[in-house]
Image (tube, rainbow, N blue to C red; front, side):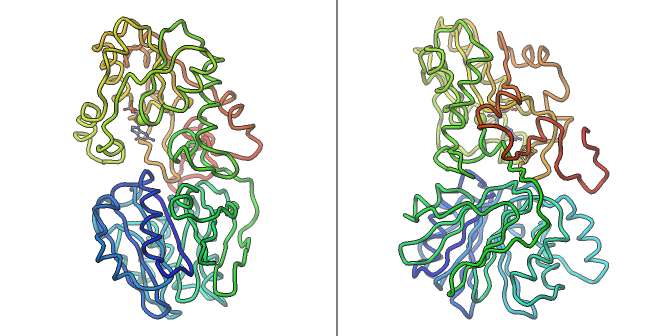
Length: 453
Ligand code: 5GP
Ligand code: SF4
Ligand code: MG
């Protein structure tokens, strides 16, 4: 998911809308904005992409000089209108709206506990659990109540919250998902999942919200709190490999440059006698450029993407996914015919897309196809907000590397190693989550997951 928050700008809802536009890659199932005029909250939410959900009239109705917004990519809860964000409640301390990126691993047990105590849930989302916890919590202000509620949760959350008087941003103690702070020309502030949202609305980047930090923005300025027990940061490394936009800089590392460095590492690990380096667009482009630069093999666009088709994996139905590959990528015989091709992609998840792409490239006349992957083998699910399937569906969890090579019909296959990945990331000392590749899960699932399942 992607989140955005705007504070103290006369066109708050419009800026939130633009911010969501820039964060569209983080979720395409649903979008929503809640604004506040200081007294009343206004909301508009819907299924689909930002451009489909909001018409000009809808934005005009979102009154007030502060707003929060959300684009949804479901990890918990079905893809239905009820499960759209931001969620917005009235409780004994006033109004509270919340937009959440991440996934709580103990949402199920908390929900059961709350339901036993009489809570009635309107959605299937773990985000609603946070609101119920807040409503039951005492505290001197909304920030304190939110922090106390969050200490009961386990998992990943980058949140933006809106009260009558404040915009609050929180990043969970491990900092799985990014969250950045920017300054608007109005003197107001913006919170967003990625810096690309700041760029679009002309905001100046101030800083990343730190893992475990809560920022409370009010008319009085910005207050920073660290309400949780300190722990080692574990930012999702897959944000850099795939999920975030290349033009974003997160926790000091530019995503595009990181991907290029991963490509150079791939060149070091897997030099190939080849005629062209071809990315699987868009996710493989930067790594393929790094590989081409390091090897001197020409970079060519041998697969052209139809940009009007969403990221296939975000759409839940398997039938759509299969169709998606063909509708999305067209191979270019003028680039591929008779060539030894190095094909670069970010990840192999189920292997179905990768197999189809290799065969598309072969059908277009490629003599050899060498498949290089800018992530290590995906061998486990993600419990922290990326929709990676369980082990039974992960090709690298079910098969050896040689079997995967055969299944996707490649002449050779190479995955970046975890060591080389961190070489490209400037070292692992900053603290990353790589659980879906390494099995080293920083937080356990509530139903008895073991560290190396
Ligand atoms: P596959 O070969 O696993 O079917 O598809 C691999 C490609 O699709 C990669 O480019 C990857 O980014 C994307 N992809 C497909 N499904 C998923 C998924 O469930 N989770 C993630 N993280 N990426 C996926
Ligand atoms: Fe990211 Fe993988 Fe960790 Fe999930 S398990 S947070 S996708 S590195
Ligand atoms: Mg891809």
